[in-house]
Length: 296
Image (cartoon, rainbow, N blue to C red; front, side, top):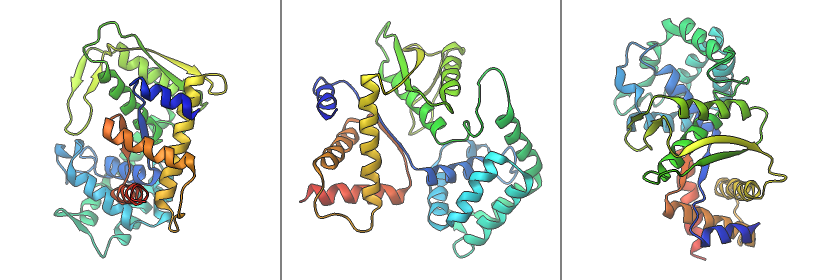
């Protein structure tokens, strides 16, 4: 499998690398829901865009919220009960009481703005979770999973990778998952069928609708599909590399496989075909780990 990966790289064929840190994605869900100006009148429309302040608040919450509160947030945004969301507000406010302000934003005070709208927010979350039929089929928890925004980012990245190449006919091939097969198929189809339009956001690939390069979506099984086997091989390697970064006691030397995967990830960082939705904390650990073993 490693030889097949190296052969693909030697032919300069792009291999994308997408890593999502679940704890950090929960922080993003907190920002996107509790700091949404639709439900929080203390905030303006600039909070609907990805900004440095939102990123800094997400990293601050990441560093200060307990595992119990992170788990509560996961339940609150999937089960969407009023009591859970109110409990989440109280837990966040209590746990950042010693450092409540980030970039001039008083987080506990700002969170109070959403409290009167908790019933409406919970109702909207439940409506999304329980919606049946077109345009997008959903399994429980699917639309709020970190996998969904990561996959959408993946689709946008590879749509633009083929900009300017006529009749490229790209088909997205997905390793079958009962939770995501239907949702991802519908998401791609909605993007293909939509009225052509481009939305630009600083620091992110343009959001394209009415896709030109990507023409379809297929579900295959990695047990029989060689290219998906390569994807699995590199995905497992990426997970092990990040686990190494998080490890307190690092080994003095690495196995040849893990050495290869660290080099592979470093190559992706240089080549640009990657998306790491991770905290600043994990990014620093990962960078330090690569430098540590590269120096040996």
